[in-house]
Length: 398
Image (cartoon, one colour):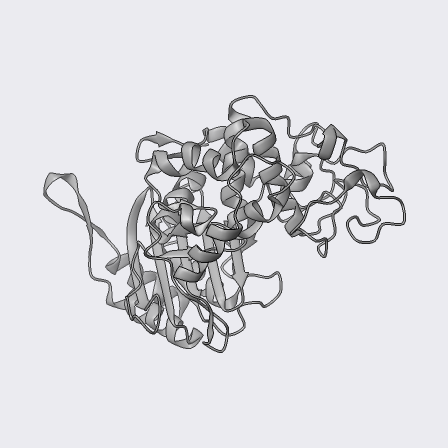
């Protein structure tokens, strides 16, 4: 069946050159039928799939509405709060500082009052940014991340924040790792995290995105988030009201840990652009948001690199998850889950294929740490662009 799908896509998914050099999407009934079944099978209120290759969108399908009450249809301008996908996007900001020579990934991190962050069981072993971004910092998956830990008060009896593993030695996904990114950026840039990301990542690419709803360039298209049973979790205007009251848009490195871990609002088209940057040379539409070296480094197994402070294997590079689908194709990216919302941004760098998938009101969105079955379906289907029927797959030079 999968080979038949690949042949159908090879024949039907084409980019047609229009006058003036513009590209338009041809009709693709095979893909339309497949993804319609995917959305229906997931039983969602709203959803979308966007697939691009070499910086050009080659497929899109939108399903349902941003809100069942208003019935505004989902399109590329719909904004979602993308949960843990925020970590990978936040990491782009960190790597902007790395490109500027302002960050040593293997230097020990500091917290309040400039004191070093240490696992109290290993006081001589620094906790580094490379460890944090690869989820090998020895922070526990259950570690709180809504408030700033008082690092200096932790002792060997701590069971709330750190595990018994040495920093760098073992993988354990922790939201607090993602939260530390905000602190690092604010400490080094002297700007609020949202301001830094807007000026250095979102605005240059014309992306409608922000880490607080009221700071979006256009907050009118925020989708309602639903629980798995299709009842409302939060409407778009409620996000705006709450963030207006609660979000502190100042530079305070010890106060915003939750922001970079899961608070990004971004349009579907914006996610696609950032996926294109990560999949390729770090550039999108002529804007170099990252160096090619930084984009590549984010994908790599950090334990294999000379002099790395990461010694244990991890499925994450620098906030980028490596995932091998059932066809044996390795994808890179991140997934986000919150209540009934599932968000995915994955890419295949050899062909620069990018898949954006959002399902709102999906059953069992929170299915553990593994890739959601519907997301794997989307990536397997996109394999037709990676391994087509004629086996003409060519590896690009890095």
